[in-house]
Amino acid sequence: AVARSFEMALLGRLINGVGVGAASVAAPCYLSEVSSPSCRGALVASYEVAIALGFLTASIANTLIEGLGPLPGGAWRYQAGVLPLVASVPLMLVLTQVPESPRWVLSRAGGDVGMLRRALEAMRKLGCVGTKDRIKYIKLVQSQGGKDEIPAASPWHQSDDDLVGLWDRLHLEAGLPLLLSVAAERARPHSMSEAPARTKARYALLGTFRNVSAVVADAPGVPAGARRGLG
Image 1 (cartoon, one colour):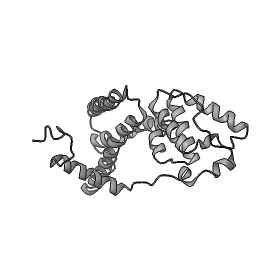
Image 2 (tube, rainbow, N blue to C red):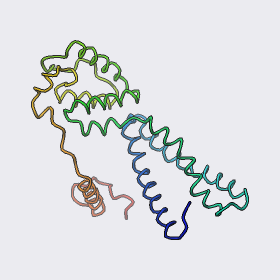
Image 3 (tube, one colour):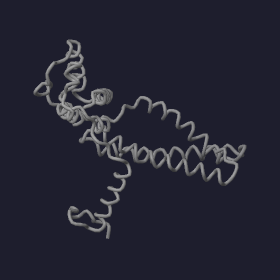
Image 4 (tube, rainbow, N blue to C red):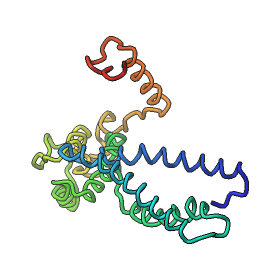
């Protein structure tokens, strides 16, 4: 909106395009990670509906701006700069209240106590069934000094929520560290306490290209019908 040359406008459009592209991937990915299987499809699809409504709202607002008559610098500066800036303010305020994706945190947690606790807190903010009971029990056990030995099984009932179920399984594999005393938690085997190896972004990207190429080439191991619609 403040461009004084074609090059500045082109650079601004490029930066804007990168941001929109990143959001187009991050938002549906986050929705799919935090939603339950029963409503995952509808929730992710609602993202596309929201985009369409945003296009409609922006078109109406742009029409109203053009109807105001000649504006300093041209109406396009208000349409491309002022309007998106105003719309971004409530979005940024809402994002400050959005919890982390528990599934993403758990993928990097391993046996790390802090990460397991972060994932549990994120699930509490999302309202996952069974989370409050686990936090309450953990606080009760820790107020008594924690357990000196690794329990043989989880002390709580299995939850129907898939996120809570995933947390239960990983917490059990890590030796239930949130229930242990400080000494017992530190004495866990290294295999229980270490964080999982992280996949580098370039390897994940190369793996995606390999998978796409395998589908296009109908390579051995590709499920039947995967190439349907590709010609």
